[in-house]
Length: 186
Image (tube, rainbow, N blue to C red; front, side):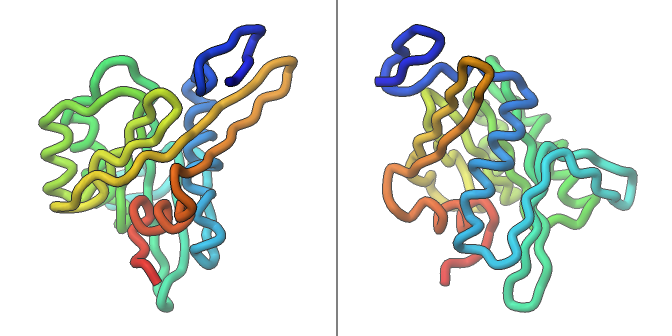
């Protein structure tokens, strides 16, 4: 059991975090977990990237080198209560195309509407839902099934905040590297 703010909140801590904290969490804890699997992995929060039609600020960007090539993954983190609509996935796809990214990832605290999931599957956008402290891969690329859940915990209190990410299985860094960053398994 986890105790937070003098309360026991089931098995997982209450995710009462701000949107900014959620974005930092996604960048640092979820995506940064692949460092042991991906050479030269650089995760940046709130990076501005110039595209063919303007400059876009992403909640997180991931850059790495694989097989002598440089890759860019752009990430949006949405701390929403209502289901994510197709339009948000469409906007992310347009940004991916504009900046020449290799992958787009949308991480949300709410479910995705059916149209959003269908669009993401068609266009290779990874969708990840955070629910009850777990990351659930809704899509990862075209035509692929969902992936196992990951356990994510946020804790804080007394002016100290921290986050921890652990996997339901031991291959968590490999899962992040392959399913979110698009790097093929080695």
